[in-house]
Amino acid sequence: MEETNLHPKFAFFKGKIIPIEEAKIDIRTNALQYGTAIFEGIRSYWSKEENCSYVFRMEDHYKRLFKNSNIIQIKINYTIKQLCDITLELLKKENYTEDCYIRPFAYNSGLKIGPKLTGIEQDLFIYTIPLGEYLDINKPINVCVSSWTRIADNSIPPRAKIAGSYVNSALQKTEALSNGYDEAIVLTSDGQHVSEGSAMNVFMVKDGQLITPPVTDDILEGITRDTVIKISESELGIKTIERSIDKTELYTADELFFCGTGAQISPIGTVDRRPIGTGKIGKITKQLQEIYFNLVKNKINKYSSWCTKV
Image (cartoon, rainbow, N blue to C red):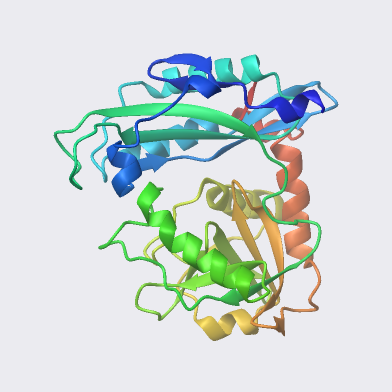
C-alpha cells in the first residue's frame, strides 16, 4: 500500500493536533443527534513542479465560516489567523503529495438531549483527506432536475453549510444516482426557479452571456462561485449576470456547468436526457477550467494572494 493511502493521520481536536484515531466524540453529542453544526470545505492542491501544496482561498473560507456561524449561534473560540495556522500545521504533519480536502467543523459538543442552539457546550475540529475529482471534470456529466426542492432560507438557511441541512442534498444526490444520472439540479423551495446542484453552484452560458442564480434563490454563497465570477470578467471579459433562472432555460442553454470546492468546474452534457449545446464541453466552460486549474496551483501571479503555500 502506498504512503498516500495511509492518510489522514492527524486531526485538530479539543484544542490540539492528535492522531486521528484518538479524535472521538460521544454518541450523545448534540451535533450528532440534531445536526447542530456548521462546516467548511477547503481544497489544497499539490504542485508537482514546485514540490509543494497550495491551499486555495483558505482565509475566505474561514471568513465565511465565521459569518455563517452567527446564523446557527456557534461561537468559534479561535481567530481566522489561528485557524489558518492550525490548518497549515496539520497539512505539514500529513505531508501530502496529492490534492486534499480540508474539513473544519464547528459544532454543539454538549451531551444533553434537546434540539437547541444556546446554553450548550461548543467546540471545533479540523481534519483532512486526500481528494481527487468529486465529479469527472474531463467529460460532461448527465444531470436531472430533482423532485426534491432546496430548503428555504426561512427553514434551514442554505447559505450556511449547516450539517443537518445536508440531508436535503443527500436525498437529491441519491435520487439522481438511483435514476442513472451523475448529479441533480435543484429548484428553489417554491419550485419556481433553479437554485443549484446537490452541493454545488450552477452557471449557464447563453448567447455568450454567463448567468447564475442570485444569492436570494436559496443557494450557498460559494467561494468557487465568486472565483468564477471574478475570473470570467478579468480573463475572458465576460460579466456574470446574477438572476433567477427558469427550469426550461436549462434545456435551451448553450453550456452549463457546476462549480464548487468539491466539484471544481464540472461541465454538464445533458439535463433530463436533453443535450446541452453540442453535449460536449463548451468553449467558455473549457476556458474557465483551464484558468481555474492554473490559478489554484499558483501559476497565475495576479491570483497568488488566493494561494497559501504549505
